[in-house]
Amino acid sequence: GTGARRHTVIDFDSQFDAYSHKISSLVVTIILIMPKFKEKSKLHHKIQNQGIQYNTGLGQHILKNPLVVQSIIDKAALRSTDVVLEIGPGTGNMTVKMLDKVKKVNAVEVDMRLVAELQKRVQCTPLQPKLNIIVGDVLKTDLPFFDVCVANLPYQISSPFVFKLLLHRPFFRCAVLMFQREFAQRLVAQPGDKLYCRLSINTQLLARVDHLMKVGKNNFRPPPKVESSVVRIEPKNPPPPINFKEWDGLVRIAFIRKNKTLNAVFNQSTILTMLDKNFKTHYSMKNLELPQDYNIKTVVDSTLKEIKFEGKRARTMDIDDFLILLHAFNLKGIHFA
Image (cartoon, rainbow, N blue to C red; front, side, top):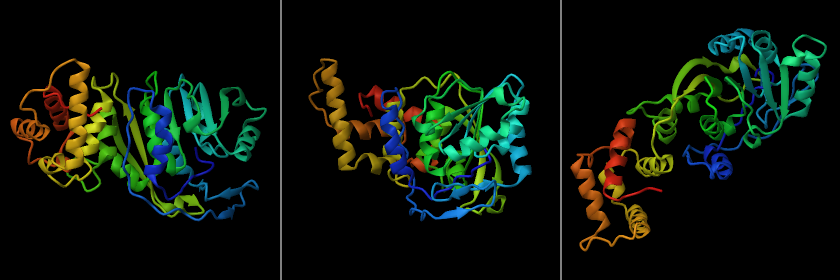
């Protein structure tokens, strides 16, 4: 939404960890490692806009450029039959434009003052019956059915929100989301790029991701400290037929030191100890006896050598490379979940 732009300089790790227990019951638990940013001071800026005092500590900023609002709506390619999920509608600049085009908008907003403004804005108009406001934290809310998601959410919840979306069923058509510029660059980063990381490969495994446009600080009032970007995410339907816990376990290890060779990464004693434990657990679950000459290091080394991956580095590996690696390890009885 465009009412309240939400910006916070963020710690992706702790925010995702706080959310991860919510989805632990699902098949997939995807943990993201992102750099830490120091907490922004919780200053309160008075904005002379409908008398609301916006809290930039919560990340509230106003997207003031109507051309950007219109561009986001255009890129969502909305249809008259669509149900839209909007996160962070603010005072409803984008909401009312979408209500003109679609069947229904479900808007999720945590700030009661903004909820009141939004209700006031559509009151006694033909748009009122098409708007459903859900008051609450989007990460703790069961999402209703939707065709398209448009989100202008606090940047500190970017990681968990992306994966909440990608785990949502039934599938939606696409999401058009405003993110902190660097986070957006990580989402679309390709093998070999400086910002290529677990977030990149995990997102791209589950979805097609496109960087749509940059949005400069001067499009917001007051201007935030970080640049922004708009990204479109289209979930892969059907999703790839793999065990995501296994997948993420492997990817997490490989990206611990993404510039090191797989041979160096997988021969760290802590990694070998973990793989050894998993190997023995899987064997005992199948009531199998360990091979007499069993040695986890030998199994790991021979697996990497057989597929000629010992010299590969995570930073240059694509999804197909990781699928080959996971399959090779699994065939040898090495598991990551």
